[in-house]
Amino acid sequence: MRYAVDISKPARQNIQVIYDYLCREAPVVADDWIDGLLEAIESLGSFPRRCSLAPENSDHPEEIRQLIYSSHRILFAIGKQRVHVLHIRHCSRDRAGSEDMIERDSAPCLTRLGGSAPRIKPIPRRKTT
Image (cartoon, rainbow, N blue to C red; front, side, top):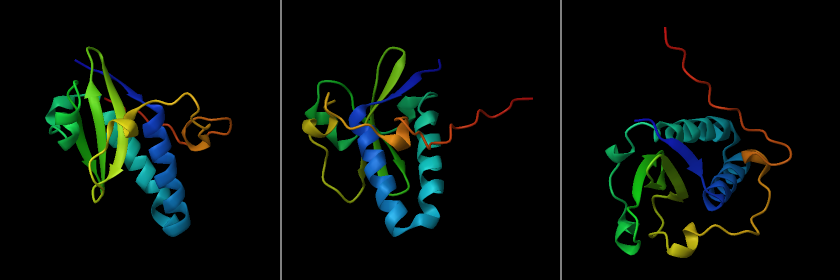
């Protein structure tokens, strides 16, 4: 079964903050990092249960899993037909709290992730021959 993958507003904010940091501190790797992160997130559409339970799992009623990408953890939940990416967190940080994964209506527009001036390159679909 193939799952649709949704990225929550908090996760989009996390990605934007990390990308902005990388653009300032390590601009050479910023675009490659975000391309790889988005590819990792897209991979959750196939076999998301391959990923381990996150330490945060015990704090939530739904099952929280994690996929490690570079030095970050992609926290997500699996629904009936969708994978919901909840939060992106550096591996060195403590566990994410519930407040880190709550969608806020007042989230700012994120230009890197589809705001008024999107700069994200869509992940190209691999051609099958």
